[in-house]
Length: 325
Length: 169
Image 1 (spheres, rainbow over the protein chains, first blue to last red):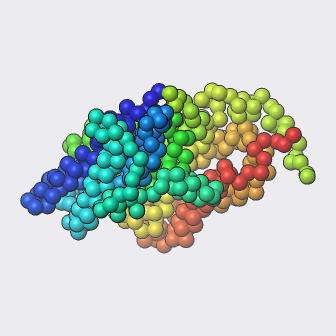
Image 2: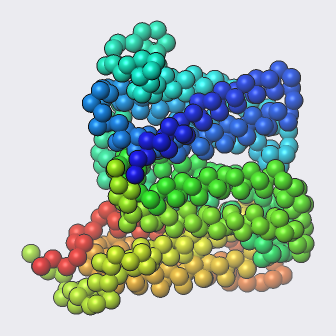
Image 3: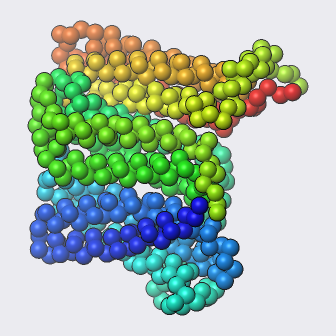
């Protein structure tokens, strides 16, 4: 199976998405419109989620293109280094956007938290710039109709300065594998993050489904930042693990299904907050029953989170289930 | 070099152990492992929510109804005791020759003991005020969180610290 098309489909999303998000964000700040601020923060969060499979699919595309001797390896390495740096800024922007959307207990519905909007603006501008470079260095690899692939030459100006901060992918991989204790520590954090996330999301989902009905929903929902913290830890340790063993994860069907389940969880969360489901349960007190739509989102959240755990556990036994080609 | 006790080899040579370990079926080793992680999520996830609440976060969550989370915790514990025995049958030498495995069992034993203490001392008297419950739970809840993180860490380390994967021949 050729993973290159997946990369070629996904790779425009983080670049164009960041630029659209940034445009909307600037307009919303100039016009001081809260709805638009929220909308642009949601774009950042969504693009940060989609940037993960985009980044991960790059290794598969690389496997497909390496056979083509006309493409110098240095071009691919430069693109990958640029992608790692841009991904880091993208994920920080996404995380800040979620924090910004979280104001007291009203995720996605309250007035955005203004004091971190400036920070988000800075990060999203840097992200957009870095994403442009990821696109340009990627285009150097494979756009023979515009330019032929050439060895990397010394860069000047802004690209020269940015390139200093771009890690060498091979060295980054070696760093992750330097000590088994570092690897064990990352995996340990991944499991602790899992417990924190499932505990805090699970109790809210179960309450909406009708268990523990003596509990009011609003304070349970305020546990969400703990779930976000767990998710943040797991996103970071997950990305680092992927950089450590890119070929192990890339050709693994369970890994890609896990990514799909995570994207569906993103959609599920967006639908929960943007439909009237969240409003309908927000103020439910002890003993009150949640409407069917909220129950549906709670059930799909639980099923998908347990699917994420299950698929994560099957990664080890599903290595090399996707043929290199 | 002293060999590990021979009964470990006897377990490994049994058909069931070999099937768990070597079967290509997705319902063998990794299926058990997945339930071990589900159990972890239920047990530690639910206990962490109780601990955090007892330590003072989100005081608007009424405490007494959280007593029902102990059912989820015991269910998680049962799943993990059962799946843990199966994992032990699959790789007895790997686990039983590793000191970290015994450390993990000790940490779990103390964490479960703390859990029963929380149930009896903090949630035992339905007429206690929330302030009393939180005062009684202060030390227990901190230990509970630390012990569960320790148990998860010891469990993770089992994958990196074993001396023998299977019985040396």
